[in-house]
Image (cartoon, rainbow, N blue to C red; front, side, top):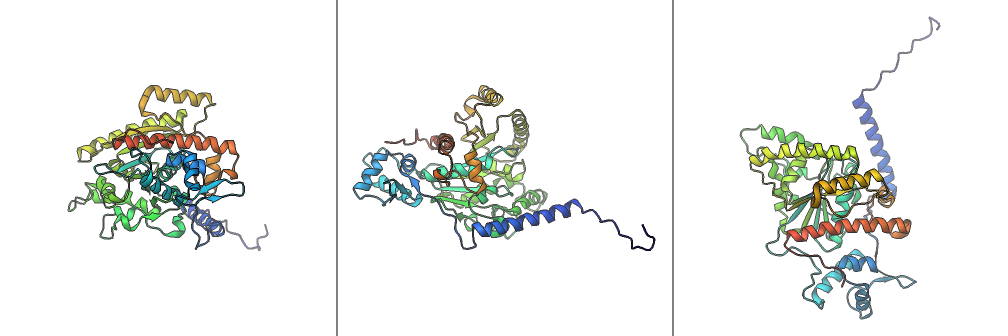
Length: 410
């Protein structure tokens, strides 16, 4: 190098925190552009039409019953294709449910499964300590299934990553929608949960979206616990149950998607829950991780109970997710869990399916995607698995109310 040439100082390496802030900002901007293309600011997430067979299944009647109602001019008018296929919107399905409930021939049938006097609000916490177990997918489809089968449902996204919110059309980095943190915070800015509940594109399903601000609860709670002049921190575990108490009369079922970590948010959700669903991918490392999760959870809940928390569950179950029956080691692990935990493992498994993952790419659930957009056999196999799992959970909910079985098709 020429001694007279200017020296070039070596570039300073970026600190990790600066690098991830830059990349996080880049991702948000790119997602914003994509979002503006797919969902303009004034756009609203819509819901597809449901086929006659789907409507019959969700209502618990035969297809011939629905055809007869249409021919007699009773109930809402379905959309009819050029080939004569009938379909209904979700709103029309709700109208049909009300019509059948009022004009059904059998008094023993219960088409509108709302809570009756004396029946407790069912709060289902969906948990797993390890990511990738299908926890959010399970929570989303369960909440939507319960709404489609006539229940009044509130979904609560308790994960700061806000995946459940995104599936329902909320974009925390753009919408600035308030999260449950607003109803949990310890200062005088706390708001009623009724002020932060949002409607979704599914009739009968509302949601409390999430955002990164939820993480503040993890920092605020230890500080509140150390505040000797207030009892708020000492009874932190009652904050979600107290918030839900404000809207108890509006819902039948609450589905909480917990964060994949054992922090104060998860503990507060578990003490508010009437039931717990633990999702588990049937592989050795995942089962080992779940074992550690259960040991830590039990160790934490014992002193919490001593402090006055009532962790009284109606039921809890393990749900096998992303299951491939043809995979020998997976099938062996499922058998292992069933032998160990017997009735605590749901009889139905959620099969691994490209249909569900493909739907997720467009921020949709399987209940939102039209069958024509996918390979028919793949779609139907995934939907059958999904409905079987959700129907089994719905049976547990109804059993908690003292009801024997859900209505099947007439």
